[in-house]
Amino acid sequence: MKFSVMGHVRRHLISVLLLACVVFAGPASGEVTPPDNWGLAFGVRSAGILHKADTNTVNDIFPMMYYEKGRFFLHGLTGGITLFNRGKVELNALARYRFFDIPSNVQNEIQENGLDYGGQVKYRVTPWFNMDVEMLSDANGRMHANAVASYLYNRGDWEVFPYARLRWKDDDFNDFYYGLNISSPGNAFDIRFGAEIRYHVYSNLYVLGHAAMTIIDSKTRNTDVIGSSTQSEVFLGFGFFKDPGKPAAFRLKTRPYIRIAQGWATGSNMGEIFTGHTKSDPYNNQLTSILYGIPVADDLF
Image (cartoon, rainbow, N blue to C red):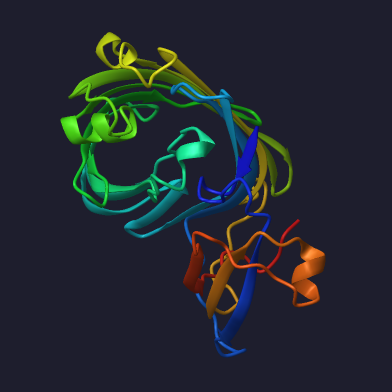
């Protein structure tokens, strides 16, 4: 069983040493307008591995952010900009993180960031029922398209979001992510059924859950590297969201800020890091970030 953060922390990667962190804060005075919606969640995801491997489960610990203001939005692992919104039709430019659940012994040979880019057309059949069509590509031009039907059920403190997705994958996408460039199943379809659940516990605190099942086609299933025709996935976490029982603020006193950081991966434990006895990561994994902190509320709880 393997734990990773966003699918990029290797099996022997115990910690990441941040060697530089600079914070530039905005002026102490002044006010900014709050977002229409916001949230920050954290949880554990457990998913099956379709490929033949010694272990059949991969586990990820990761954060999710939610933010809506004007045309810009973040919904968990999906972010984008609304380009057109009129009546029941909405057109969005999207970027979405996609988990790449593969055996740990090939993760360093096949290093992919899992971020897809593309567009989405959303049609609101009713205020609670949506039909989406998406065309997405990874950074190397491997394409896949999604047709998604989703429904929002909201009652009291409960929100349930069931969905069904039909996905088409082109030759390059399916050969790389499912055939691992060992087998060549070619273009194919898969289907996914799932549901997201959110429960309001108290004030800003929520509990989140997600369960899904993906079924791949028989052509891909019969390749040499695939060991199962279905993949299950569950997620459990908690988050802080806008308090539904509190009136929305018109202005915020909290200011934005910018943070710059550089990190190098190491197989050393925390004690070795603090005493300066670190070992270099043989794969030279690094993290460089420029972060813009956006205020969402002046207080929590």
